[in-house]
Image (cartoon, rainbow, N blue to C red; front, side):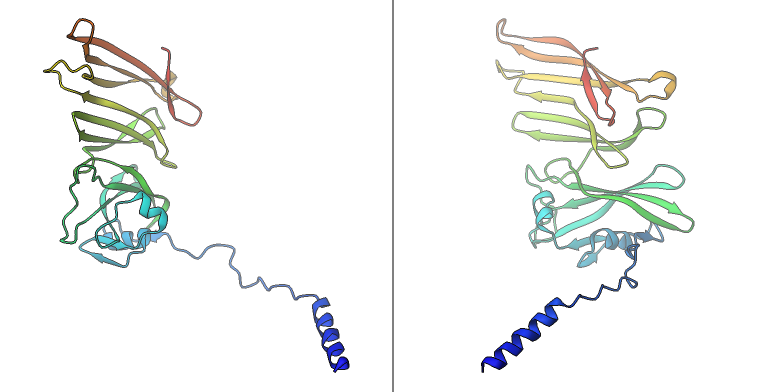
Amino acid sequence: MKRLWLCLVLVMLIFSCQKRKPINTSSVHSIRDTSFVIHSLSDADSILDLCFSPLRIVKKVAIWKPTLDDFFNLPISDDSLVHTKIDTIINLTKEAYLIIFRTDAYYKNGKIMDCHVCSPVYSIASIQQENNHYTITNFKKALIAAGSFGNGYDTLAIEKFGKDYQLLKISSGYTGTSTNTMTNTFFELNNYAQVFQYNSYRSVGDSSEYDPEYHEIELNLTHIAGRDNKDRDDIKLRGIKTYFDTKSKSIKKQKVTEYYQSNDFGIYQRTEN
């Protein structure tokens, strides 16, 4: 019995000391075989299938299973799934496009949820045309939540802030308890970073009563062109603030002017002048 045990131990030691054969990597591809190509911008189903890998597509709405991250960042419908559709396609140049997707939460009856804080979340993809096909070069699943009561953004536009600096502008209104706001948010188009945001209009409280919290502000954005139109534009916000003055117990108005410049990362920061 002892001899048998010694033989087994000896065999195990011999095998453990042998060098493992190297893994044959000749069959491993150095380039991912994942395809990011679509053949037509009018083929909504193919675009949705590529970007969201849905369980199914019903009337150009992709229905897909959320991950844990999606659960906390996107509207989840009553069926515990995510419902996404193409909102709009923006032509930037002859070969470059943006696709904006919209995700809403749906009731079981198929209607969009219209509660006070129900707002769709928008996704974005960059598309580059190459010969007879289109390649997705970047994608972000949760760009911004905009709107309320089941309604989305108010306006969507591409705005130039310099010769070679375009920004995506999303204007969105929100109505809360004694509060009305219109917000303009700007994103750069490479990595979709938010670079600037301001309230073009905001009112709080009731001006018809002696409400110490009442104030209202309306701002207009003006571009200040960079030198020789090569630099990024500076920003000037100018408007009027109306508020209830507690000392005089009357409504007063005040001029407002703010200046902003972009830093090395293109993000606009407030300056003194």
